[in-house]
Amino acid sequence: MKRDENLSLEEQVAQIRAKRNGGEWKDRARRILNNVFLVVAGCGVATYFLSDDKMNGIILVGIGMAFKAVEIIIRILR
Image 1: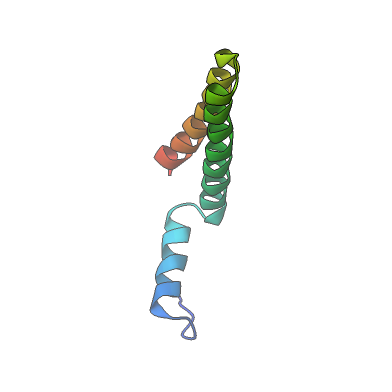
Image 2: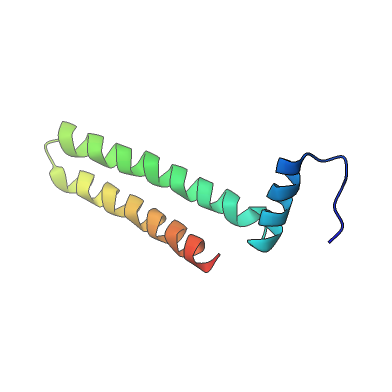
Protein backbone atom coordinates (compact mmCIF):
# COMPACT_ATOMS: atom_id res chain seq x y z
CA MET A 1 0.00 0.00 0.00
CA LYS A 2 1.50 3.30 -1.08
CA ARG A 3 1.42 6.07 1.51
CA ASP A 4 1.95 9.78 1.15
CA GLU A 5 5.09 10.75 3.04
CA ASN A 6 3.81 14.30 3.64
CA LEU A 7 0.98 13.10 5.88
CA SER A 8 1.38 12.74 9.62
CA LEU A 9 1.16 9.32 11.21
CA GLU A 10 -2.35 10.06 12.51
CA GLU A 11 -3.55 11.07 9.05
CA GLN A 12 -2.06 7.92 7.52
CA VAL A 13 -3.78 5.77 10.15
CA ALA A 14 -7.08 7.59 9.51
CA GLN A 15 -6.76 6.89 5.77
CA ILE A 16 -6.03 3.21 6.37
CA ARG A 17 -8.98 2.87 8.75
CA ALA A 18 -11.31 4.69 6.36
CA LYS A 19 -10.28 2.43 3.50
CA ARG A 20 -10.64 -0.70 5.63
CA ASN A 21 -14.04 0.33 7.01
CA GLY A 22 -15.61 1.09 3.66
CA GLY A 23 -14.87 4.78 3.39
CA GLU A 24 -15.83 8.00 5.01
CA TRP A 25 -19.42 7.97 3.78
CA LYS A 26 -20.38 5.44 6.46
CA ASP A 27 -18.88 7.57 9.19
CA ARG A 28 -20.59 10.67 7.83
CA ALA A 29 -23.94 8.85 7.58
CA ARG A 30 -23.56 7.55 11.14
CA ARG A 31 -22.81 11.04 12.47
CA ILE A 32 -25.79 12.53 10.65
CA LEU A 33 -28.15 9.79 11.83
CA ASN A 34 -26.87 10.10 15.39
CA ASN A 35 -27.38 13.88 15.37
CA VAL A 36 -30.91 13.48 13.98
CA PHE A 37 -31.62 10.95 16.73
CA LEU A 38 -30.40 13.34 19.43
CA VAL A 39 -32.49 16.24 18.13
CA VAL A 40 -35.69 14.23 17.60
CA ALA A 41 -35.40 12.36 20.90
CA GLY A 42 -34.65 15.61 22.74
CA CYS A 43 -37.72 17.22 21.21
CA GLY A 44 -39.73 14.13 22.15
CA VAL A 45 -38.62 14.30 25.78
CA ALA A 46 -39.38 18.03 25.92
CA THR A 47 -42.79 17.44 24.33
CA TYR A 48 -43.53 14.63 26.77
CA PHE A 49 -42.86 16.77 29.84
CA LEU A 50 -44.17 20.12 28.58
CA SER A 51 -47.35 18.98 26.81
CA ASP A 52 -50.63 17.69 28.10
CA ASP A 53 -50.72 15.03 25.37
CA LYS A 54 -47.97 12.57 26.36
CA MET A 55 -48.49 10.39 23.28
CA ASN A 56 -46.89 12.96 20.95
CA GLY A 57 -43.69 12.86 23.01
CA ILE A 58 -43.65 9.07 22.99
CA ILE A 59 -44.12 9.04 19.20
CA LEU A 60 -41.24 11.49 18.70
CA VAL A 61 -38.91 9.42 20.88
CA GLY A 62 -39.94 6.33 18.89
CA ILE A 63 -39.11 8.07 15.62
CA GLY A 64 -35.73 9.04 17.07
CA MET A 65 -35.14 5.43 18.04
CA ALA A 66 -35.79 4.38 14.45
CA PHE A 67 -32.98 6.69 13.30
CA LYS A 68 -30.72 5.21 15.98
CA ALA A 69 -31.57 1.67 14.85
CA VAL A 70 -30.49 2.52 11.29
CA GLU A 71 -27.24 3.98 12.65
CA ILE A 72 -26.59 0.80 14.64
CA ILE A 73 -27.22 -1.35 11.56
CA ILE A 74 -24.67 0.70 9.60
CA ARG A 75 -22.19 0.26 12.45
CA ILE A 76 -22.73 -3.53 12.54
CA LEU A 77 -22.36 -3.89 8.77
CA ARG A 78 -19.08 -2.02 8.90
